Length: 378
Image 1 (cartoon, rainbow, N blue to C red):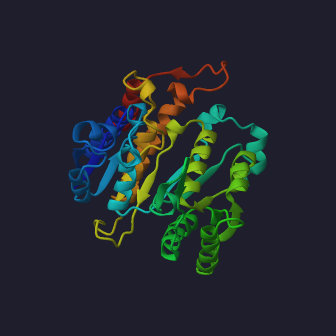
Image 2: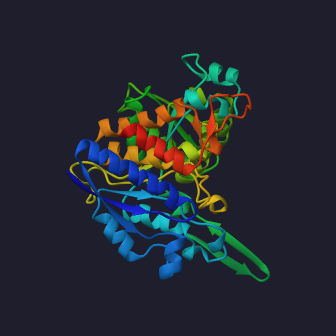
Image 3: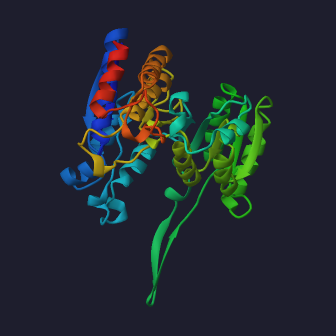
């Protein structure tokens, strides 16, 4: 079978790590008889340098013709002085809105091989885990195309006093569709879903709770709970094992998922999927279009130094196979290869143990880690 995959390398370490995701897919394709046609596209800072805008129209149009988009991080200090509408990050918002992806799935699990890289003590992890083991496995489902990032914004001048505003706006339909993604995920996991909001202060959050209370009745086998976002941030540190699926707004999900990534050992390990509906115009063969990207930033300070961790990008490719292409077996092969490499003690610097007496670890660079995964797949 043939598939077209749009590829945006992005800025900083983006092209480095995404190139390994592409190579992994090429090996999987050869192994399983699939052909992946990779369509290189520009977005972010590199697109600004080349075209003067963060998201060229050509990038969006060509991406729409593909089954999925593999995306590297964008942005960096080079473009920080540009006005907001020209910043590299505007490309992300444009891609999400233009490609109809509204639910961001960010899994965060503490792999046993990386337990020594987790900042939490074993007794904290054990006490919070229903199985009594020193680990956690949660999924944050973040609404992606609504809320304060897409609401009305601006500045006002009143004499010498300047003010700025951003508006949090949500419709019931936007909330309902992302909740259904969360409930579907929870039904396939441990059947627990937590809605995170700030309903004691924000009217938009009160609409989240009202909508969730109505939707929850359709999923009687799922345990539904509610937390204010500040309490959730604390509980992630205090007892992450209590969580299964968290569903929350764009802003809150952005912050909480980065917090969860640190608990997993490193932000360099975490993949993400941003998916749309299997019924919309961009869906192919009943599978949703998706944007797949590691959640770490562009880290320009370590770009082109053979330091970056490619595993989050590689695991993002596995999520792409699972959600947009329906290749569960192939996705599992990639995840198993990553696990095997970690079992053998290979670590990029960001996932090295905090203890210096771990003798079976070997610190390697981007290239060696990527090659090791390829070797496991061949």
